[in-house]
Length: 312
Image (cartoon, rainbow, N blue to C red):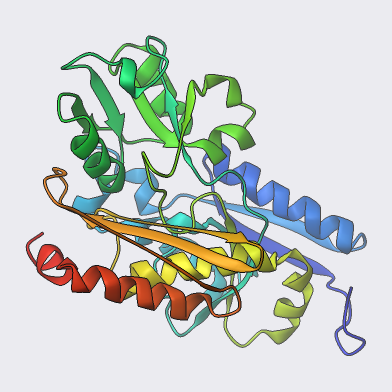
């Protein structure tokens, strides 16, 4: 799998958050690399990020998704790690010049999941029932479609969120289906929400591998892990979010699928209370994902997205 000019790696250190899901994801990448390079010593470097430490406030109030990657990027810079494994929905839309995404792996189901011990789906929930979510994106769509439900903040890792549900603090919670599936908790999913009901976050369900820029040998070693179709979808989605300054502070979703070589991209931006929700969709060639994302962002701007975002 290597270029003749790039010898096989002897040691690779993977920086990862220490949540159960993050460790599963890093372990998955480790196993894939080990199968490619059997003689390579591959180690995990577990780290706690500020996003893991601050659990009493919504992410939108404390700096957004970059809180989950900063410490891992520091490890890349100081050489204590070679690669960092991220959920792509947690990766800031603009990487610093010192970093690059070397690979985006095959995508798990990118949709949201409805999890409840009491109800089979959102349509079954009575007025005043409490739904927990960590995401302004989900919150805005819930408010728009189900204005009679009580939507409240839910922080913590996946196991913590499930525990809070089981303790009765919420009647239902909305989580990424991918995380539940990866941890063998698919039986907790009562319903997978279609994109029409809950448009996913940019990059949801995909794993990305970040490296320090200027390490071509590392990029070559990781190239076999890149899935071109998943990467095209994720890059289109991230272009929408980047063009509209998307972060945890903005209720924004973007979701791309490839059908017969054509990229179908949908996006929205909204007020957190769901009182305004702008939608757009486009189709275009899969080999120009960023251009399609930028075009869809322009469509949303034409509907008034700039004024809406400026008011948040």
